[in-house]
Length: 218
Length: 200
Image (cartoon, rainbow over all chains, first blue to last red):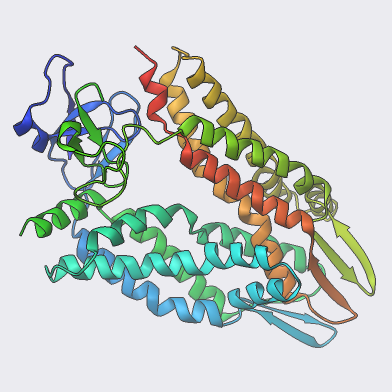
């Protein structure tokens, strides 16, 4: 959707609500206009991105969510890095990192890591799968609006990309100490990370909300 | 706001405020989220989270975030100590990344949020666009400080060779995770529309 500024003198009336919108960051009233695919509309006053129109947003997000869920299990259960000191080997998976913190009386820390690197990213993938399936099949799945709302709430707390940087720093700290070998889990993790990034780039949330609203009306 | 409309901050739907009957417990007809003209008690909540994070920033920096035990000798590291070790080992780019993510970002973020709060409370008229941009940057960079916490979780799991080498997480790590979470909560509770409300 594109936008055009509304002069302060034109007060919105009942029938104007359908084509008026407000900027989420500065509350400027704007007139909606169709945005061409691949373009984004920005607020003329504060520069906030109001909407990004995406081609095949539902299909693409659905496909990505399925791919992400398939890779998610090996990414969490297979070792990410393997370490060799004096012939002894040791490997770490994402979940064993959480478990090791939990055992060493750092349960608060282990919960933070578990939430940010496993639970939130997994919930996001499941929510996107559920929402896009509901919209794709055009069935009124229960609580579709609530799911999209929860997606918005938890979005910021998933930190896979930060975890990736954490792996790089851990790797550089270890190469002096021992022989470090990247494992299959690392490649699966990178896959999940890329897919999660693609999903947030392809999801046209505004369109999703409009489709959900249409479903609610029927 | 003056037009008699409420903007849902979750699904971005505009609703006429007159059509909402119960002003105190309004929820969005489309997504069900609680609706407010502005986030409730935004300024005091943001101050509360900010002050809590400033308090936690002290133990986060003076207590060890992890202990590396090599051949029986324990060697506790603070955040700064970890960066110094990386510099000694000649890994300057990584040392720089860790320095930015775990020292600079939390500090600048706390200063930035404090500035935004003061600017709103004193109804500054200048540079609302820059202040909005600053808010956007603050929201984006805060999460990257979790870097150290994730690194510790990987090291603790991997380096467990009994007497030869072992890594323990330290209490400073808990304080540091608290700083990151609290500053994130502070930036979420700040309502950026307040910047523009005071500008005419």
